[in-house]
Image (cartoon, rainbow, N blue to C red; front, side, top):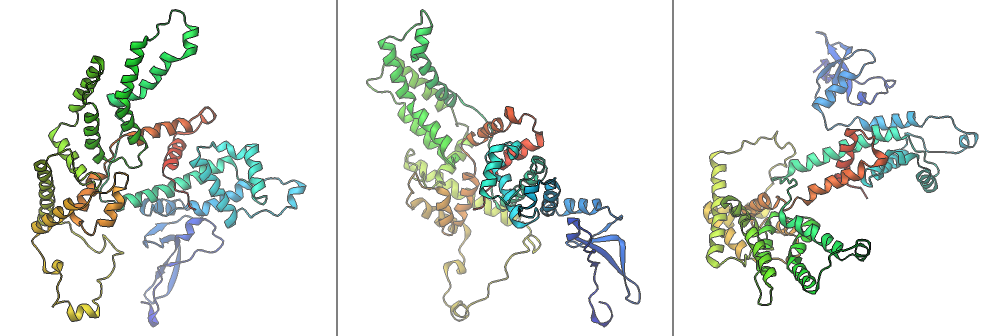
Length: 474
């Protein structure tokens, strides 16, 4: 405290003539002598967020910028730069007619909003930066809002897209930080997927009429071979259905794998009308598929994931003893995890969650009746009993329709089954297919086209990331 009860200031605001956006986050350091006289130190600045002192050389803000990037990465300096760079990039010699037109100031809210919208258009619709100079696009913008003037393509590639990328990255990091479990996937092709992908193309090529007319001595399928081809298509239809389902499903969880495997195996059962070739094909598919997912640890993991999916929790392909054993395993896993938390508790302080709410104040009803009419939760049951009741209740609950969303169901019922819900989060977050990651390569091919072959690698990464993760604000 200074004399007279005045609060000691740690910094003084920079003069208004200092235009750099960095000065929004820094001020000049203030020192006090023994007599509490204040002196402003123009060679030292103070961060307004953490009050760290940073050396300052007249006109050079690089030290302050480096401090913000290193210690406050969530702070974006691009917001201020956008307004400044728009002004610079838009300064050009106006024609006589343009000088009489009233256009948006380049630093105005409207101009910045439209400029960002054009950036979102480039990122989400895989447009080249050069679109901002295309006659048709410029005509569209002028028709929609004649008062808006487009900045240069360089401004979009160096300012707007990096700014969108930075903000989207921060948003994704924030969402991931709140996730209790995370599942990743990569590209692994298996025999069934590759076979069903190529089979229609091969079949069409064999029956193409133009091909028959242009090639002499082409070998045609006779009636028996044509019939066999049609039978094989019927055999392969379940595989094609599974492939389509896993490719189009928005959340193809790992819990779908065993039910789909059982469905395929059942559809491959030999029929009385099957020809010898069809029986041979079915046997080959069964033999190949039966060997998959047989590793004990992997199989147990898949079984638990299936049981924790409210769509498949009835496990109709298992007998009663196997179902009971599986749910006992879930019970044991939950109990074991709780014991581990008790033996190795995770330290928690207010710093870990600075925004945690204060303890809930008791109501008048709680004050009067709380001790007399205790709930079961307040009385406290042994943890094994709580887990057993929770797992049993979940097992007996009705399954939801296969078209329903298991994540919405768990969000609604998490309060009923808190411990089982945690296990469901850990298992159902794992994707059951690599289709999502494979589509990234298709997106990359769309971005790096002949018209955009000179894109820098950094911009390619940013555009792929934004196309998949940028959320358009309505």
